[in-house]
Length: 252
Image 1 (tube, rainbow, N blue to C red):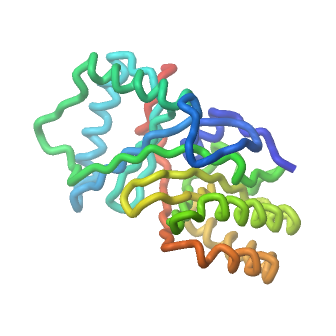
Image 2 (cartoon, helix red, strand yellow):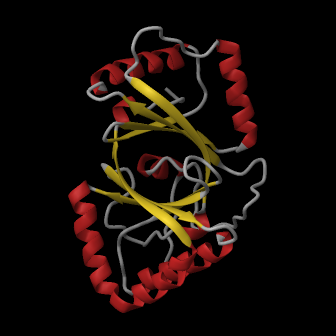
Image 3 (tube, rainbow, N blue to C red):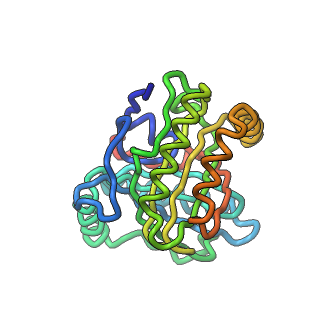
């Protein structure tokens, strides 16, 4: 059974800006469909403390000028990930761009600790979420989110979704209690990809429970996975540690 997921709780887990249990999605989203902008700040070696100070100063700027959008921060090695929630899709994107034009952005001449930046625009794929009635890690308690980033071949957009929904059926049939969320990024570094997010108490907790779940599902899981392998170009595994102390809450 699917559990209702509130907007605030879900954002605490992975920063996805919608709520509910299921929804339709296709390769051409409506202009008002929820989306999120992700800024990846690649840090210079040994510059984490410098970057944190820079981030604190940016938070002060956003707060002092009434910035109207929430931002959620996680880190992985030398990369900081900042997700901006855009619940009204392109309408919010236009409003956000107008806000920065009106306020002149945030400039800091001295070292920020950032070597280079990348931005992507993604959208939640609610039809691919698996949210059991009593998830192993409740919403808001996840200190780590594991991201499985899957780069699909051309023409495999719908096929990938069909197989993911089959996988969710296998999860439910075996009573797996770990929740998983999904998003799609059209483009970005490496090309279009799906991201599957697994909230966990810790990095070791994710790998331990993931191994247990795969052992429980056995051949049922593997048979479905084998169906999608020919449609995948490559995949990446990334562990993100939440830094809620560096979030921006527009309501404050």
